[in-house]
Amino acid sequence: MTHRERVLAAHQHRQPDRIPLDFGSNLASTITAQAHERLRAHLGLQSDYTPTYFAKRSGTVIPDVAILERFDIDTRGMVLGGPEGRPEQTLEGGRLLDEWSSIWAKPSDGHYINVDGPFNALAEPTVEDLEKIVWPDPSDPGRFRGLSERAKALHEGTDCAVVMTLGVGPVHQAQFMRGYAEWLADLIANEKFATALFDRITDIWVEIANRALTQVGEHADIAMFGDDVATQRGPLMRPNLYRKIIKPRHKRMVEVMKKHGKLALYHCCGSVYSLLGDFIDIGMDALNPTQVAAAHMDTKRLKQEFGRDITFWGGVDTQSVLPRGTPQQVREEVKRRLDDLADGGGYVLAAVHNIQADVPPENVVSLFEAALEFGR
Image 1 (cartoon, rainbow, N blue to C red):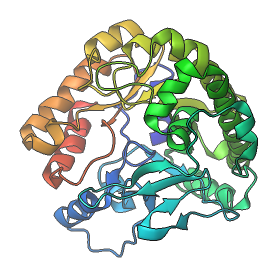
Image 2: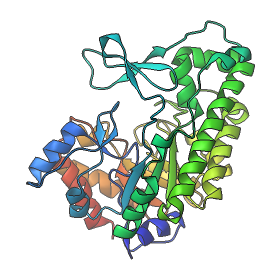
Image 3: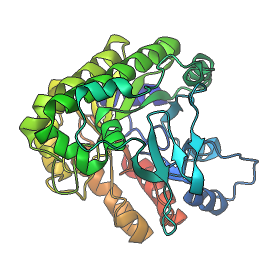
Image 4: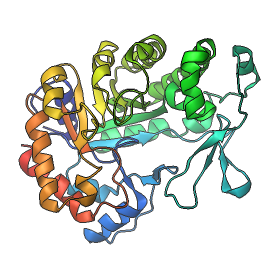
C-alpha cells in the first residue's frame, strides 16, 4: 500500500499491510523543539533545518522531513496561517493578546505559554455583551495565503495522507475568553449566554473551515479540530450537559468536514469513554490521542466496544512510559497497543499527545522502530 492508502484503509476498518504511523501531522501528535533537536542529533542528521512551529504556545514543531522518511511516517500535516488584520500583539511583561481578546503568558518557572485571562472579564455577562466584542474576521486573507499551493505540494509531492488542522472548537475558545472556572459556571448558571457564545464561536469556525477546505480541495484527506471535554478522571461536565449544549455545535463542525469529503479527526484528551457513543453518533471518524493513562481508557475494552465504528489514533503512553521508561519498555508498550487495537484496521499509531522535552531520543526511536517491526 502507499502511505495514503494505508491510512485510509485503517479508517475504513480494513486491515492495512501494516499499521499506519503518525508523527507531526496535527496539533497533538508532534514534538517540542527541544526534544526534536535532541532527536536530530541522536540520528546524526547534519542537514540544514529551520524549525517550523506547529504551535508557538506549546513550543511544538513540524518534524524534519528526514525524520519522517527515516521512520516511514504515513501522514503529513498542514495548519492555517495567522490573521493579518489583527495579528497577535505583545503587551507589557511579554504577555500576548490574540484576535479573540484573550491574554497569554509564560510563567517564569514554566515551559509553555498559557492563557492568562480574558481581556475584558465580565462577572455576569449577558447575550447583549457579545455585541461589544470585536470578533475575529473569518475571511482574513492571512489564514489562507498559500494554503492551496501547500496542500497540492504535499499531496502530489508525497503519497502520504494529508491532515488539515482547523484549530480549536467552541469549548476551548470559550474557556480562553471567559476563564476556565467562569466557563464551567456559565454552563449551569448562565446557559443562555453560554449557548450564545458557543454559537458565535462555532459560526466563525465554520466559515473559516469552509474557506480552508474549499481551497485545499482534494489535496487534503483528513480534517481535524481539537476541543477537550474531559479530564484524566472523566468528562468535564455531566454527559447530558455535553449532549444538550456542546454536541450540537460539534455536529455542525463535523458536517462541514463531511461536506468537503474529509474524514473527521477529533482531538480530545482525557477520559472520554462515556462520550464515545456521542462522538460516533455525530460522525467523528477518529479519536486522537486515545489517552490510555486516563480512567476507563483501556485499549482492549475500547476496541471491543467501539472499534467497528471509530478509529483510535495515538495510544502510546506519554505520561510515564515515553519519558521514564527504557527503550525495551517502550517496545513493550507499542506491542501492547498493537495487540489491543490493530486487528481489522481502525488504528493509527502515534504517541499520546506531543512528545515533550523530557523524552529521551532513544525512546522516540524505539517507538517507531517497534511499530515498524510489530505492526505488519
